[in-house]
Image 1 (tube, helix red, strand yellow):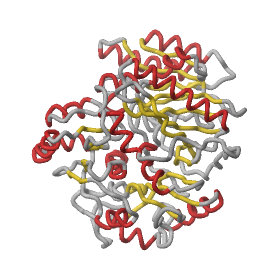
Image 2 (spheres, rainbow, N blue to C red):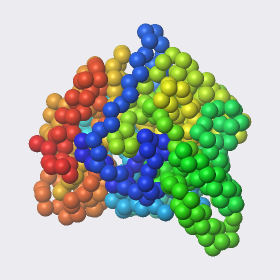
Image 3 (tube, rainbow, N blue to C red):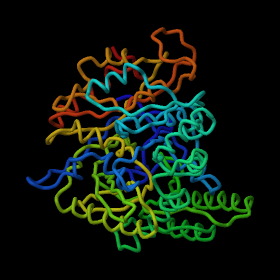
Image 4 (tube, one colour):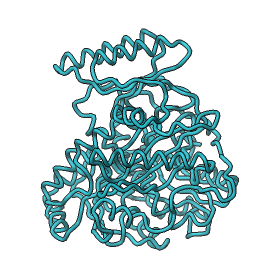
Length: 514
């Protein structure tokens, strides 16, 4: 398969891979695919959350009190970057092109919103892509685009700089619409205040608190849930003590993680006393310069595991908890590559996941949180669970697959949500992609193929004024992008073959597809 996108988005499973990372700022290497672990499911055992009904309707009822409330969805991905502002951090590296692609993940909201909802996007979606979605029977929301998008800004920041769009959103607010961001941070609160549109979720301060890895460990400890050995650190002294304790265990690898790290950033391996001392001194210098001794880190053992899991539940305004689904995470060279549906857990494993979700939901509700919650978990080599690795108080990549899973992953079929790296000399229009993938795109429920659920990320690296064109002279290339989609098939063998065929057809650093 093609190499991974530099500094690319890897959702939330950057912490407990088969081996610890070399550096918090390391870029993923190209590697051969790692074989996924498949758990056999006994006949009659549950396979995941309730696939019946409409996820969007349930979400609206949970976060606004009524399923009829019109929603305005905002895809401000990697909201952790906002939550981490002002925090002491580890060294990190982020390419401008990678930021541009992440910011175009806003287009995922198109397939979570309902027919009577609205989405705010950085640019108008490709017309052929919209036609493709409509041809699948998708009822699409009203799209509002910002004026003059900046690739390095989130869609929220673009919207705040557009007076015309702000007036439009104020009109929607007057008609009863609620704002549903990917995650709530200060810019989203500012957008809500400017337009008069209520946020369908708790405030930014609470969302940041719940999303902290420090919070995750403390809540798991409080509930008696199994966790890797580790410590929470909220002062420089506590960090120093935890680092010293970690390197005193020569037989176990440990890592230090920022409380608000995301997508492989903000994590470092502790391979000995020298590295631990260097991390401690660096954070201590930051604290001294800022005049603030408060820090937010966790130090944890890097445990052996058989598989990564991600599960989601939704906490309602009334404190109720609804389990949504659990998915297995697939990796390639230790890097998250997608979600497998169903997860293939045993009945006992599934029951433990659901029970943990109920415990966490009650605990988060007690703190005033409501909305979507994503939780990372692991299966150890003996089949036991680490049911809470970290809690994400925001939407997850899986959230944007929910409606598509309900509509297109029919019966007992198998699906894989993943992204394909692409390497382009010029912008690639969707109708050209359709030619490249002729016979490989999904054409409806019951068929095999790839359902594209984000096309904007393909061309995000090009200057915004070039637009999709078919000529090979457009300035700005070559660039790296990503094609996101959900593969659907009847069996693992068919899924593997379909994945390989799509990979071979796409333009990549290893050569152009046909």
